[in-house]
Length: 317
Ligand SMILES: Nc1ncnc2c1ncn2[C@@H]1O[C@H](COP(=O)(O)OP(=O)(O)OP(=O)(O)O)[C@@H](O)[C@H]1O
Ligand SMILES: [Mg+2]
Image (cartoon, rainbow, N blue to C red; front, side):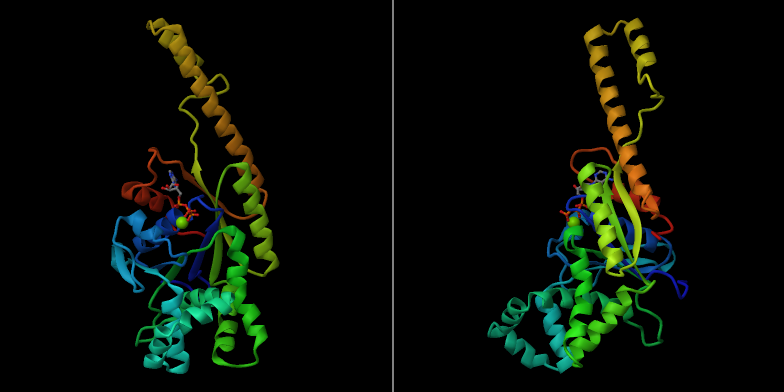
C-alpha cells in the first residue's frame, strides 16, 4: 500500500495547547480510515490521547483504540521512559531479570537522572523500533506511526539527540542504534508537522521552529492551522447590515440589533487577523492545511475528532 518513499513516521509538534494531540489523533484516524495499520504514540506522560478518546489510561502496551475500513486500525501507546529503559537493557544487553533487579534498587531512575538526554533517546528509540518492526512474513507491522511529540520549544533537541549520541561513543549498541534513529529521522520516511493557531505568538513560534528543524536537517512536513474561524455566512465588507435592516424592520429593538452587529464586526476582524497570519505562514512555502474551529467550549468530542479526521483524508504531506 505505501510506496517506498511514503512517509512512515509522522511527528506532530506545535506550541503548547495549539492542538498537537488532537491533530495527531485525527491524522491517525484518517490513515486508518484508508486501511492503514497505524500506531499512535505519545511520549509526554500526559495521557492526552486517552482523555481525547475517552478510553482508560494507556498502559505501556499497544492498545487498539479504533478500527478503520479495509483492515485499518489505530493502536495507541504511551511510551514511558523507565519501561523503555528496561526494554532496552533487555534487548541490547539481555538483562531481562537483571534489569528488573536494577530497577528495584533504583538504578533505572539513577541512570535516567544522570543522563537526562538518555530519556529522550529511549523515547525516540521506542518509536524507531515501532517504525522498523516487521511481521514474520517481513511486512512492516505498522504502515505508519504518528507521534504526538513534545512542543516546538523542545522538538529539535528531542529529535536531534540521536545524532549527538551517535557521535559520542565509538561503537556500543546504544551508539549504533542512535545512528540508525538519526538516519530515519532525516530521511523522507519522516515528516515533522507543525500545528499552530492563527495567532501572532504561535505563528511566530512556528516560523522559528521550522527554521530550526531545517537547520538540523529534519524533514518538515505540513503546517496545520488549527481552530480556523469561518467567515459568517454572507458577511462581506458591511457584515450584517442587511440582516440588521431586516431585524429592525421586524421590530427587534435597536440596542439588540446594534449588539448583534458588534459581534459580527468583531468576528469579521478576527477572521481578517487569522487570514493575515495564514498568508504569512503560506509564505514559508510548506503545505498548509486548515482545520476549522469546532463549536463548543469544552473542546473536541469524538464526533468532532472524526470530522477533523475526514478533513485530513489522504494524510499529511
Ligand atoms: N479544531 C478545534 N476546534 C475546537 N477545539 C479544538 C480544536 N483543536 C483542538 N481543540 C481543543 O483545544 C485544546 C487543546 O488541544 P490539544 O490538547 O490537542 O493541544 P496540545 O497541543 O496537545 O496541548 P498540550 O500542549 O497541552 O499537549 C483541547 O481542549 C482541544 O479539544
Ligand atoms: Mg497534547
